[in-house]
Image (cartoon, rainbow, N blue to C red):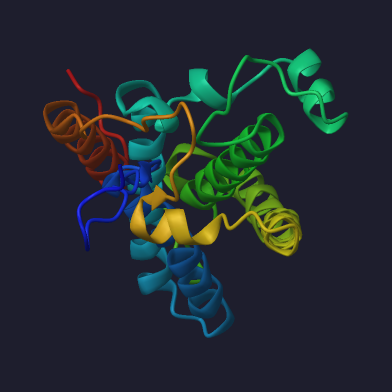
Length: 230
């Protein structure tokens, strides 16, 4: 017997992949990095320092969220060993069913970008010349000659970071051409239904508040020159 007239099949719900805090963090990176490039090119050093500290705080939050956040935000979920990565590249992914979040290769790409941004912003904390313009908040902790070397490395390493960003964008484009849309879930948080996959659970807001508080406190401590805590 057919169903009631006008009553169609119930469609499966979309699969929730990314929590809102991870998405907000993700999209802040290109905005802040672009702003830091612009401020450096136009000698807006006070603003450059402020944006750098904001980026440091957001990176600190992302690291904490890698341990406290939902499943797809956690490093343990997407940082895989060499065997898993090689199997993925050979088209033989491990596991019995489909998975959400980063692929084994995408996980390491994410870690490379986070690590590169952390290194870049950390170098900036020590860089600058106190006799010739703005300095990072931790510049007084190193000598003038070491600060000069760090400043040069800070400027040069930006090209490495830029290269990683280009590779990241190229990978997104490659997957898009193959029909795997990675951008839409990062905007809306969900992807079309997947058989056997329910998606992540609710955002753990208590842990989120803790992570934001710790990251903010660390950024403010650094902004004040990392004074002794005792």
